[in-house]
Image 1 (cartoon, rainbow, N blue to C red):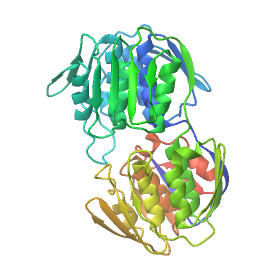
Image 2 (cartoon, one colour; image 1 turned 180 degrees about the horizontal axis):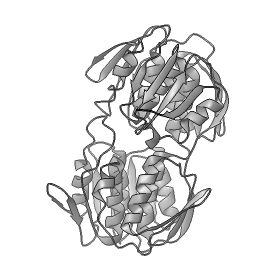
Image 3 (cartoon, rainbow, N blue to C red; image 1 turned 90 degrees about the horizontal axis):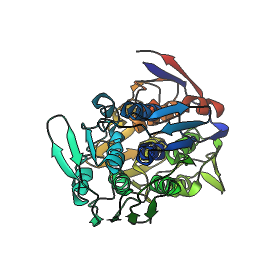
Length: 418
């Protein structure tokens, strides 16, 4: 097990960059199954979630080759339709692989997925909408079995714009002769990236990025190559790191419009923001003040950046109110930040933060992916040495986070520890 050791109090200065998107890579890796051909992917982040997904693809029969700057996946000889239970339990988003398997083989079997403990993320929304397009579902105590003769033409309206359910429906509907329409679909940039990838292979997916997506089935797909979009959550993480330390940073290789709500809030707390085509400059040399935040599906403020921004607000002058509207356990990490001197109160889905002048160091244990990143940021601004352990969550979603922070001047190392 690894831990971060952070000597806080250093302002971050300089430039860093953003890796490929975790949340775009995983559904695109799943989509490689559908074609039965060879796919070359670029800008895939070297993170644990990707490694687990690639292990699943290998167990299903895909040939996977990693080269310096690309991953080559040949799914021609894949015959297995059961997702390995031990890997399924490590990664909640592995459920989207089911949609890809169903598209190609008209059947799939998988167990209930695992992942971060940040609240209820039931897969019933996936399963209920699978049924609407003609997929039969058989659930027992261990496995969920899916099968169908063909994907049926349907207009579906999601009860909630779930990213995972939208992705699974798109994947399951790609092959065939029918048209599936998804209303109230998720509009995240990662959905757009998935649709662009599928269309590059010869699929017909229209409307990605809006709340109505149409999938017109095709009979075959082709070999392709594709570059994964940059990770908007990592971009926000590095910018908030600059803000919480009172630094000046430039973050490259990003798409600024993907994080517009975050940039607006950074300006609102008192940061100077300058935007160029593929980079954002942040200067946080002024006293920062409290703001209120409500997390919402895209294009609202992203729930994945709420823990990091909430940690920033612990040292902003005044009282901030955060409303978490996506995951009910997103505030779990705050119990650790509170040990660093943060003044907070939690009332259901609302977090009330009264800013303090400074946090102090502590030994912390990561509770989930984004909560762990928030603890790292707290350590960067705290007085003294902070240790963040249980990094198994954090390494699932960030590629070389400690190195990128060191490039900006942070005093952070990763070492073995209990």
